Image (cartoon, rainbow, N blue to C red; front, top):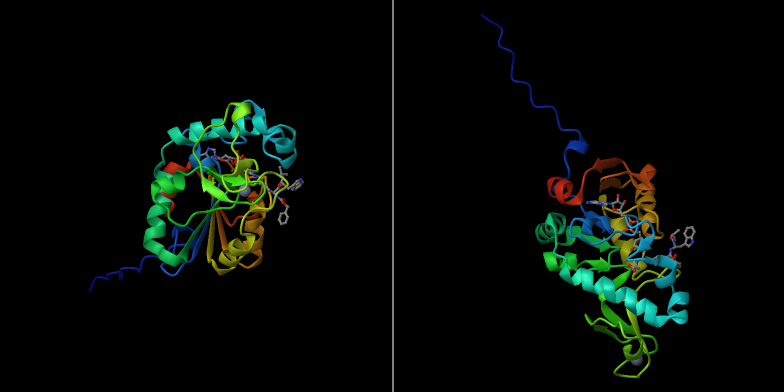
Length: 248
Ligand code: BV8
Ligand code: ZN
């Protein structure tokens, strides 16, 4: 009687070969890199100069106090560029994951553009504010605003209290929005996926360390290792629009 080897059960795939398990709770943090393939400049890519402006001259409270017209000019150019941009397969894949996973999915973005929303994401948290909202410097009234303010004599004022309106953006030196909510979502996660960010700005770049301390699986996805690469269990090298749909 010839020996017929029993069919070996396929080796259980290594965890890193299986992107997500059915019971996983996914916390996603995105940065400028996810919008790069939609044509929007990254901070790093433009070598710290951004549309010709140095970040510290346009993205700090001091810059606002010193020259609000220059700040509005900068954000008006960002509004113009972002209005022409379209979401890419990476944004669409995250919107599909939100739909499929429900409350097991949480998206926090450092980006101020609205490409996640254009792709269908309904619950993206913009921890650094939103380009298409303006906020009153006095009564803090926030309103949707896609207008471009390039005439220093015609800067916007609040319809309620007449104080100057500013971009609803978290500048350097200001506290990001809803850090408590972010932290709650982070500690409930089983997988933290970070996409397209240099990991150079805190507290956002620190989320992965907090996850690692809790034994949460951490994955980075982007074309090059980020500054906080040492904190990740896995690094998937690739562009967001190629690698993210595959991972999800
Ligand atoms: C705060 C809105 C107190 C503005 C932004 C010294 C040491 C450490 C920290 C500090 C320090 N001095 C000051 C600080 C604090 C400071 C900070 O971290 N500074 C850095 C420069 C050292 N942080 C702050 O001021 C923050 N506030 O600390 O308040 C506090 C905090 C907590 C509790 C109490 C009090 C506020 C920071 C928010 C500033 N606002 N955005 C606007 O948009 O105009 S930050 C802005 O830059 C982004 O939002 C993002 O957070 C950050 C970095 O940008 P990235 O998204 O990472 O983009 P980047 O260009 O850097 O990288 C692009 C990546 O994409 C690259 O990795 C690239 O490889 C990748 N990529 C490229 N192509 C693709 C791709 N990936 C995928 N696919 C592709 N195709
Ligand atoms: Zn007001």
